[in-house]
Image 1 (tube, rainbow, N blue to C red):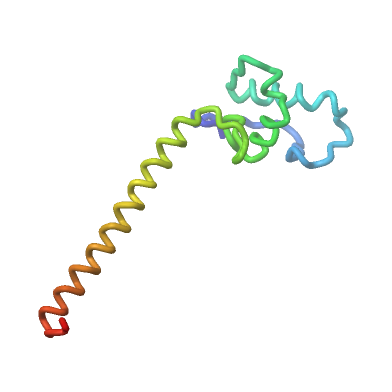
Image 2 (image 1 turned 180 degrees about the vertical axis):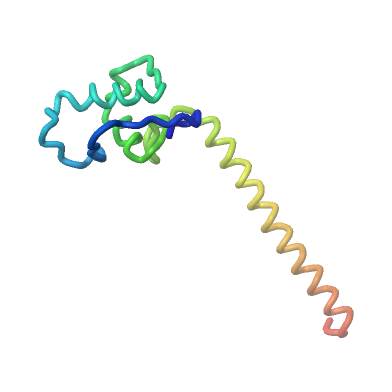
Length: 118
């Protein structure tokens, strides 16, 4: 099934293979062409075939990623990731501050209620 909800069928027997599976009937030089053909048949258009065939892109596609991004590699849109990290960093800081302040408030309330202040 494609992202736009369309499906495609194949008549006859079909062999499913991942990028690491040996394909003895397929010459190694034919694999990049086959992958581009499958990508185009699914409605994909890539402006730079050399980038599409790069090792980084092949590994990303094997992981089911739409863009050639691998953790620890070169992020094609680092601004989005950095913005998300800043958001969660601020959220974490606020959570720590609220917990610490809440602990002080509860401690003071208990000390006042039970006369535990020295």
